Length: 201
Image (cartoon, rainbow, N blue to C red; front, side):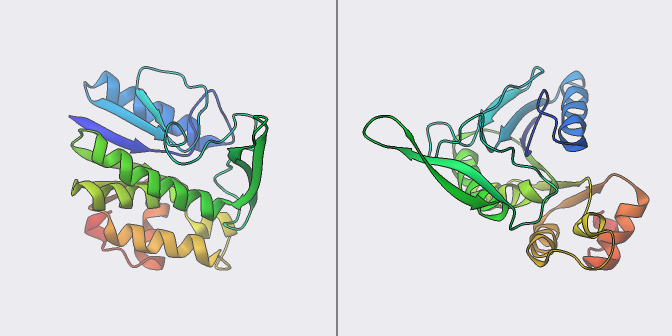
């Protein structure tokens, strides 16, 4: 079996626990004989034996390694600096983008990657990668598994959620074939707040 996985970061980058969790899950899949193609939104150093693809390489937009990290738990309107091209002297041209805009760019690239690669199932981690997973499913027709490490309700520590993040979660959970949560508590949020059938989680 070959899995096309979308994540926002991977060790040695450590913006939080998400990348570490992705590393552990990927390691275990590889040890179980599952091939993993792990797609990241921007070029970075990586650790482990998965095959890594970077959504900024040889496609539409380049993102410099030293740019502000694409932190997963910021609000959807948090800004990051990205390189959108180079001037005639080779100097980078910067543009500020929101995390939400970067998640949409990642999804566009995921659609291209899904048409180029061979795989059996799609696996996407956290809201920043859910759009990429859904785009890959639409492009390939392959089943989609979403991995919920935290929800917009966890990030808000209550009901005052970021509506853009909630909308991504809601629509992605509806499109997914299966939703995997990190705990029974998180499953309860997904079922009650996002209205996902319990049997799907």
